[in-house]
Structures are given as C-alpha cells and as structure tokens.
Length: 477
Image 1 (tube, rainbow, N blue to C red):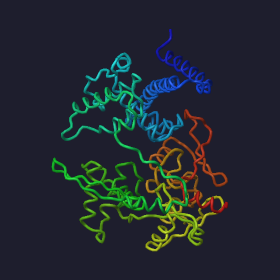
Image 2 (image 1 turned 45 degrees about the vertical axis):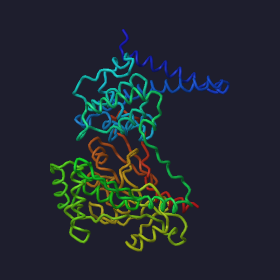
Image 3 (image 1 turned 90 degrees about the vertical axis):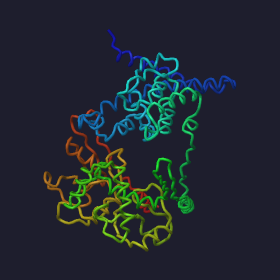
Image 4 (image 1 turned 180 degrees about the horizontal axis):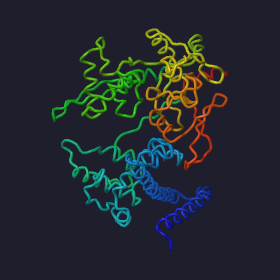
C-alpha cells in the first residue's frame, strides 16, 4: 500500500512532467491575445505559489532536522553546512536571500496545521496553539500553504510586522497579520512590505569614485525620542566608515556569535567573560559602544574591544598605486574604492607589502613555529578573502588559520602555502568530521569524509579575495 510519502513523490514527478510540458510549449504563448496572455501570467503565478508552498514545507523540514540540539548529527552540519539556509542554497542553486526566505517561511509552516490550511477557504488555518515560535504569523504561513501567498510576500509581511514588544502584543500582531493576508490578495511584494528596494550599483569601474562619493554623501546619524522614554539612533555609513565600526562590533561580540577562538590568555579571559555575561548580545554591544564614547579614543579600551586595534585595511596592487590606474578594496567590503581614498588611507596608516607569485600564492614570510604570525595572517587574509569553505561568507576577521598538513599529525610547516583561512564553525567541522584539504598547483581542494552522503568528488575552495582577483587580472592584461 502506498504511503503518503510515496504519494508525494508521485505527485512531484507529475508536477515536474507538467512543468516541462508547459516550458516546451512556451513559445506558443506569443500567439495569445491580450486577455489570454494575462490569464496565462496569472496561472503561472498561481502555480508558482503552490510550488512555493511545497518548497517552504521542505525547507521547514530541513530546519526541523537541523536543530542545534542535534549537534554534528543535524542534517545541515552533517552535510558540511553551517546553517539550514546554506544547505538549501547549495541544494537548490538559489541565492542566499532566496534560501533565507525559504527557511523563514518554512519555519512559519512548521507552526501550521497543513491539512487544515489546505482545506481552509480563507487560508487562516488553525492558530489556537500558543506553543509556537511565531504564533502571530500562523495566518501568513497558512496562506502560503494554501497557495494564496508567495514565499517572498510572506517574508515581506514577517519583516514588516517584526516581533512583539513593549506596547505590541501577540494578539495585536496576529490580528494585523490576518488583515494583511485578507486585504493583500493580488498585491505585490513591494506593496506588502511598504518600502522600495534600492538598485544595486553597476560594475562601471569608471564610476567607482562617483558612486563612492554618493554613498559618502548619504551618511547620516539620526535621533528619535520615543514616547516610552527610550531614544532611538539610526546610523547610516559608507563602506569605509562601516569597515571600522564593523571591526569594533565584531571584536566586541564575536565570542557570542561564533567568532574565532583566541590563543592569547588575555583574549581568552575576555571571551569567557563575554560568554558568561548576563546581558544580551544587543545590550552588550550597546553598553560597549557607549563605553567607547565615554572613555574617548585616547584611553585604554582593550577591555572592551580587545587588544587588537580596530582598523580599516585597504588592499591595492603596487602597479595601481604607481600608475594611478585601477581601484582598491576594503577588506570585508564588497564595493571597490577609488585610488584617491586608497592614497588617503595609505598616507594615514602606511603600507605592509605582500608579494604574490603568478599563481596568486603569497610568498612565504613564515617562521618555524606552530602559530601563524600577525604578518602571515595579513597575507592569508589578502589571499583568501575570508573562510574558503565552499559557500561560506565569513570575513577574514572571523577566521582561524588552519594547517592543511596538520601540525602534529603530518608535521606540516607554518607557512603560507600550508595555511588556509576557515571560520571557527568550519574549522571545527573539518577536524571533528574528518574532512581533508589537498593542495594541487596552487589550488585548494576540500575532500569529504568517506561516510558523507554528498558526492565524494573533491570541491574546489576558491579564494574570496576581490583584491587578489584584481591583481591577477591586472597581471594578465
């Protein structure tokens, strides 16, 4: 007798066959009249909403099987991924944003009686249980399950409503969500979210300085006095300013957020104190920034941000500096910066030269010791651009230097070719689950353990350093 799981697989196969048939006949749509064309668009949108519902349910099950209490045996971590969203992005080939949306909406659907939602005419479903993660969003999840709301629209409603807080009860949010679901039939995502999206910067290299100037002109610091006696500040920063503030914020909070482990005894003690602090991460960050402002920059603030001085690190090739053609990069920031900004930062902070060979490998500046030196860490950051585990986006400041050939097991040297940057999560995962890394002609390859469910094919670990890509392209030209 066929199980419900068998019926689901059969239904999925039928849906895929139907989709393939529609796609193969898509060119015939050009012969439709205006009314038929728009009706076809609506039908496709409805079909996508139903597929959204299915994808969200599956994402919710991935979340359920990847709960933190499962440890390394959880689905996402077992397959080599830090989060359920990272696993879904890899499996589906979607963007980070799309994967995160599926995870969030899937979490909503974990709180929904799916059978009840599918049969409900209004898509509200059963919301009587109070033991739910986000009970005010049950109607939103039910509307997705019923195929009347897309995953993107559900995420827009979730982001717009926020969470309960002072003066905003769960009941009030539940009523608001139901009204939006009822009134939002046919509304687009932007309307539901009630805000516009900014377009991404183009890739026009000649416009880098102008776009940089425009971003800098938009910097602002605003204050609002709230009726409840609290004060809200909003600080918008250009990438250069954000690089400094992000560095301070990361050093303050990284022990709470899975940052790198510390070797220095003083840093270990500071990290332990942060982990044991009764304040929330948000309260800790608020108090620390207030402490920095109170003490002022000429005071000893190592007990707040650690012993390393937060700094803006700029990466630029020597040729670009000497010829004044090209651009630079701020470590940890996506957008290029103009040479004028590079020269200003160099004038203030000086330079640390790093020499690369033609394969993009930093020439060894190491010593015969176990720990990588600060200068080696700078070179690794410039070469790797952050954690090199496939799909990970942790910046250099959140990484640890791993010996490809292990220091003790393989007697591996502490040099740049034998070093690679991994975030704490992937560094621990590599050792605990027995992954390996091999180097071949300057490329680094990730070797899965024998018992992993994924393909045993080695996975390339490309550098994430935009500055290194710029340098190699400059040499090639």
